[in-house]
Image: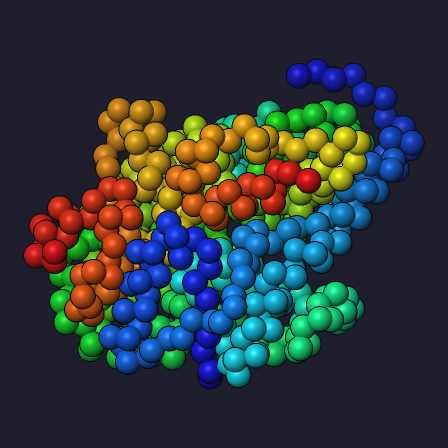
Length: 139
Length: 292
């Protein structure tokens, strides 16, 4: 994926970067891209953008690519990344912040389509699964 | 210590095999536990947004209920309920402003919460209040020869601040299994995520996780997996059919709650085991060791 990017102070200090830092309570520039987070992520195989790449893209203010990514919804906050980061950056919080930006703004588009769940699924799936998916994937 | 037991929503429905065996096992150990009155769902996940206070209401309400019963310690067998309650409790203990907002919102409650309830997982009660040596002496049917791989998943050990044991190499469940007479089998993926709520809309992710986790345990010679979380149990047990479809060479293993293993070893009545709620039938494996 080759993305031509114009780096400018406007991009690096954008509202998006500030929002992510505020919601996650993390400093993006603390990350030095060691890759421990991505190496430990149990669902990395299913991500279009890896955890360390997500941080890098937030650093660069790449809002469109992040809010349209699959990866932010693949993360389940298992906190393996947080537990491995040598700079104590909470990557899981950063990814949650991007999800929150999607869920709290614009049309508040739910990632999980609850109405599309079959009646059978609603009965066979345990409450813990249904509630946690609705909490994380809907507004 | 005045204990209040919290089952959580899933233990009262899909995971009655955990709830029933918890009550029976604790009674066998001479520590009758009392279920918290008027408990509500803990909310499952601890939201990570720094401004998220509304999702702390459900856990804090439960802690108010504990206080109302005159108890000072909240315990549960469910790893997710433990994790969510513990983190909410930590937050309000560390952030008085957040606690004030929550109490203000819950102003219709008769009791304000002051951060004075302890939250402990049942495994901690077994280790710290009863002690594994004392527990071992009460075993009637030692699980001799049974090789059990203890799967901790995420919520018992992450984040580090609330871990019930060492984050990278937890032993607490393994020590329990040893006290019950079984052989604890370490394996590489004991703290690796099962895929959690992807079981709802992306079960193919669970199929991959279950395949890797169960296979890693089977390769070390495990006869069964022990778990503490009903979501892990659902993924690692009920989704084994999906794992088999993904990897035809997949080897099925039964998945039991640690409380079911306790109930067997302590000689509890078999009706509390509720194996009808386990997907892979544990009975063939148990019969091989004369434990049915």
